[in-house]
Image (cartoon, rainbow over all chains, first blue to last red; front, side, top):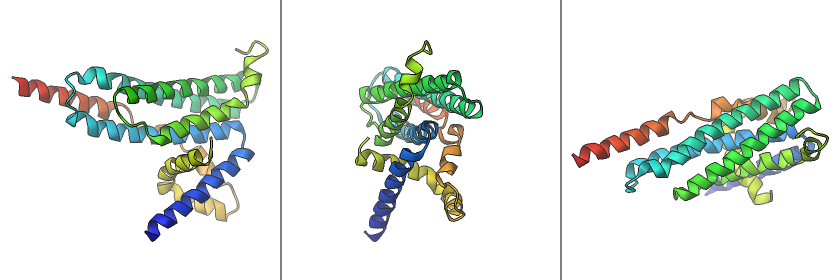
Length: 154
Length: 69
């Protein structure tokens, strides 16, 4: 009970730190925090799916879990690509590299959304962390959208 | 995102923090940004590949095929 209370307080402090730090950080760092949060959630997805498959009575396992595994792989690749693009932008600033990082982050968001849809279709609970991490990336890239959607950048 | 979402995200981040909490704490005490530790964390180190799921799926299918014989 005391441990749970301590954990809750620690989480609350961390949540406020997240909120406070999000206001001060550049969007690239906020996007990276979201990418890492979604990455951790992917680890949870793996654990859940690996536990579910052997006990699932569904006759066609391929059609149920195939899309999940495919989009999991795509999500991993997209997160890695977004991470690389953000790193490249930090190393060499400029509108073109910023918009590459923006688009790579948006790609990651759309693939994470697709993975969440696959999980729902397979009756697997979508980890709340996956949605929260996805939302954090979406929010972070939201601030650069006008710059990358105008002036022929897109 | 509302406060509840941030708490959920904090829970996800918390799982990453476990192994690197010491370094974050040290940076915080030293006056630098503890969250930079998390930002610097590489996705490749966090997200497993699809191999384990693919193997589990293949094993489950093989087991069913064997049982059906």
